[in-house]
Image (cartoon, rainbow, N blue to C red):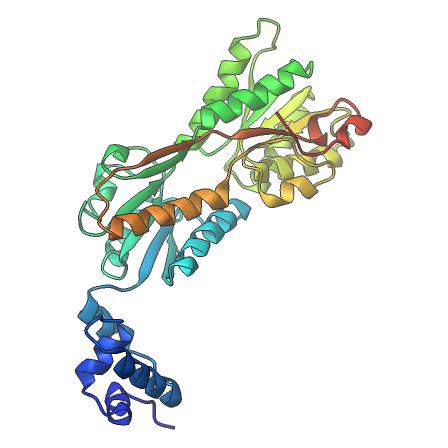
Length: 341
């Protein structure tokens, strides 16, 4: 069966091709009765406008590009969910890609996407002047997530990683733990560095805290498992704070394989509050970040920029300490899941 064209719609509605185009694009110059007739013809013929031709006419793609460092894991799933909720609410489409943590690939993807989208949300630890030159200010509206470098020139949405890590470490110290180990995120990652700094700052405030113990990870579950095994081999600490929930999940498995009880033998905490963290056994104490809401607000910022807003918005989200059973003194105390402080 032949696919209907815009000319078929024009003949069926007894109007010009230009009128069909204006009616579909909701131009105010088209009378209501004419628009209704055109839309009726569109429906009866099952006509789908050509996206390329429509973009040329309107200079809009109705698409927002999203560039992330990775797509694996619940953090990115939640972030994408929040952005998608915003795009759907505004009748927009989403073009998604990731840079594999490579700054050169991030710059290449920015160049490739900027002609296909109306605005972009970019999350990259390499968002410096060189990378951002691939999408020069003014080419398309650009919103940065948890990125350093040239943040001042663009709207930014970031997390106070130092404050969140400081709160988690203080919570463990207040629970009587003194030998607190830390599983760090990837090297040269801005967020990982700030979480390590918060951990160290909290330890520095307590003269009775034992020396720091840091095991390197990469934000993935497997690295948390490996880091947990290394920490156990070096001497079981009182508590382990993983720089994200995914590594805490891996570490939990390492502790179980070693026959150690959480929290009886070792308290365990993470960062992010991904959805699965509350359903672990035991549920995980963590620094809660409104991941999906950050994504949605970033998309709303893109919409504002497309609407002509000239403001450069910088929003910093402070994580909330969520105390669950993985750091409670006893199993009975741990049943009081989800206590926020």
